[in-house]
Image (cartoon, rainbow, N blue to C red; front, side, top):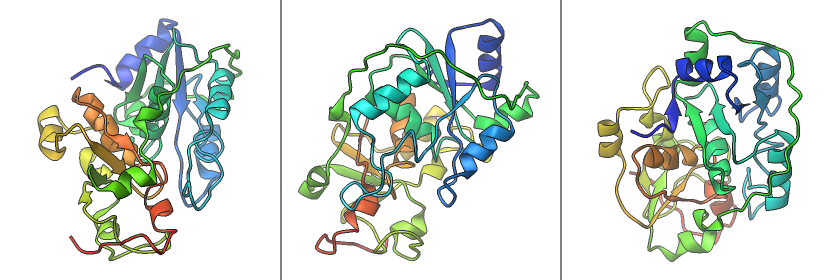
Length: 273
């Protein structure tokens, strides 16, 4: 396994030694846009800046882009500079959902922007607290950088790419939403025809740590033409992250995901397993 996933002890050592590292706190709650920031304000890893899901990691919702569209190149580049990120520093991202909510999305976006050294805190906030590592509530004031990222849009799948039907589609939502038994958010229940169910939460254990490489290898289908989607392009990044952990080719992300697909009643919908 590569060093994409790091443990809390490694991050603590980096911070103690003054390593050039930017820490992003990506905790979020999709039902409450203010909850993530409130959690960060209460306490966070020392020096961590808040990566807000709705303000920093997404553009405003739209029918075409879904509930959490990607921001423009210019908007996200400006955000990266405001966080003080450069290609020379390490970036460590964490959330409290094992990456299955926001940390994987932040990781993917930094990869999209071309950053060469992005890591995810394995076990997230819980692992940091369980290790009795220091916390703080002070908001850091990072020094802005002048980085000009180069984005790789080949990592993105469009609705047209999905509709073409020649890719393996992996649906990261919980099984009941995939099967159409429950749909609390989007216009229609079910999944994109031909998709396979691979819930993001199934890739981590009860401590929110990633499964072993052998277990991940068994869970993830192999292929060079794979697209990952979920409800709105967030937990889908967990599948992409798991492939990166194994050193496999990265599936493309369908950012609009089910929220965009299901907004058009002319698009086909499948239900059941």
